[in-house]
Picture 1 (cartoon, rainbow, N blue to C red):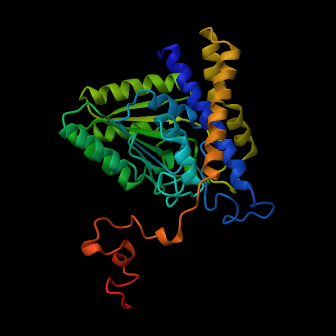
Picture 2 (spheres, rainbow, N blue to C red; picture 1 turned 45 degrees about the horizontal axis):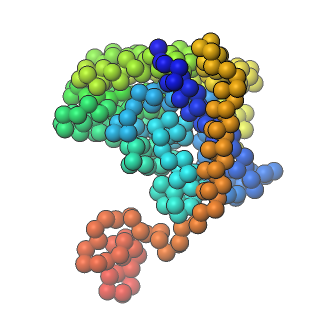
Length: 348
């Protein structure tokens, strides 16, 4: 059972993540309505928000250190916040600003913060191999660092995931795979994409420990993650955890969700892991005033990050080819190495 302090930390991470997604939704939709234009507004392109997923990120990452590695999928913000990613620089990246984590070039699906060993990918299940690699490195270095790979239930049939399970098991690696099951793989209900309704059962095929958390309750996630991460740190190999979460928004911003029955949307809206954790804290004599203060601090933190990001400069178009290649030979620029122009100034 987590201490009251740990529960308060999880609550703060969860309310920060929820408010962050709600504010990003507002910022994203600016200039995109009434006729939705994905290229318009301060945040162009796709945006996948994780409102309803907060318990999994908070309940897992509370056990992690900065030297532990986390890889996240295309819906990454709640996990990044719980892992301690710099909120201002992450927000600047989402707004495409020069001071962002990736200098404004990666966007919200390609966040990378080496200070806390966090990265994410827009490709389904592609965070699994890097997490396994980090776990292998930790084992070879004889450290007790662990790696955690988050993915959605729609990714559990991907080769990258299944091969990662196999390699992690064969090598007895300190890695935890966390499936966030929100019942929907984009527009497909779970029972139409796989016959395995409990993703944690995939662990049995790889002689791996598996755990299913049936409700998106932060305390239940905490206990499952404590077991899984503890096993990894103690040299007892990988664990596959599946957490039931819920999706309070569309698959991406602009998704009208016409495929989704209204009763399903209402059912998911009625489930709220944040309110459940607040009730648990009240049971431990944490006052409503204290909870309000945590929420207020979280909202101020988010607002400060958004305002800071919007004030940051946009990237210079001349920097588009910077950082594409490393160590260019003979002083050649990245642009020259990319083949756009020859180093001698001639045309291709």
